Structures are given as C-alpha cells and as structure tokens.
Image 1 (spheres, rainbow, N blue to C red):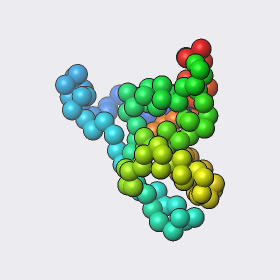
Image 2 (spheres, rainbow, N blue to C red):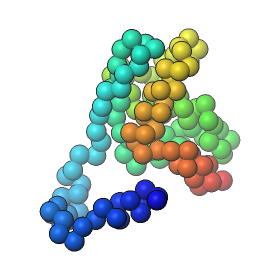
Image 3 (cartoon, rainbow, N blue to C red):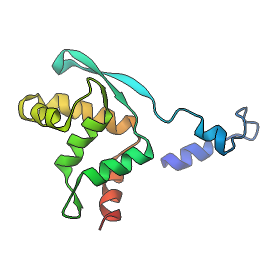
Image 4 (cartoon, rainbow, N blue to C red):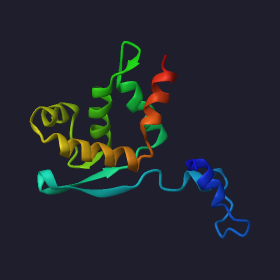
Length: 130
C-alpha cells in the first residue's frame, strides 16, 4: 500500500478535526524538531523537518551542471536539517573528512525520514531538473 493510499484509508467520515481555511492552515506549525541519538559520537543532535520551500532550496543548492550531485545533496541535507548543533556547509565537509561514516548515514537517514524525503524524492528531483 502506498503512503497516499494509507492516508486516504485513514480519513473517516466522522473526523473530529476542524475544516481548515487558508489562514488556519498557514497558522499551523510549518516544521517540527526532534532529537536523534548518534551513538558513534556519544551524543544526540536535534534535527528539524524541512518545509517544501526548504526542500526546493536543498535541491537547487545541490545542483552541479544541471544535475543533482549526490554528495552535495547529502551534505546540504545535514546542513539544512541540523538545529543543534547548527553547522555550516564547511563544517559538514570537515565531518565528512573525519567522522565515522555510520554516524553520518544514521544522521542522513533520520533527516530524510523526518522530512518525508526518500530515494523516490531524489529520483524525482533529478528528473524535474533535466
């Protein structure tokens, strides 16, 4: 079952949520945060979910000669998503040079999952920019 089918299946006729108008919807939180434990670093970090506008900026910042560069996308994802500690792209680059790859993969997976981004997203982004 796809994610969309799952959402549709969960809609109920007698739903208790109020009907939303434009201003109500815009007034809702646009992002959320959560802590992610990184055992390889012996600490936890805080990430945020990315808004759609931030996802578009992420794709654009990750383009090289008209294509999404996988490494740049990974690094930008961490830079865009990390809240605590807040890292520049240069600091993320330094982590890539010196850090445990398992820690970075764990962090990337958390960022992708929390923002609803998957490999399908990356493939679609590449197709959109061709």
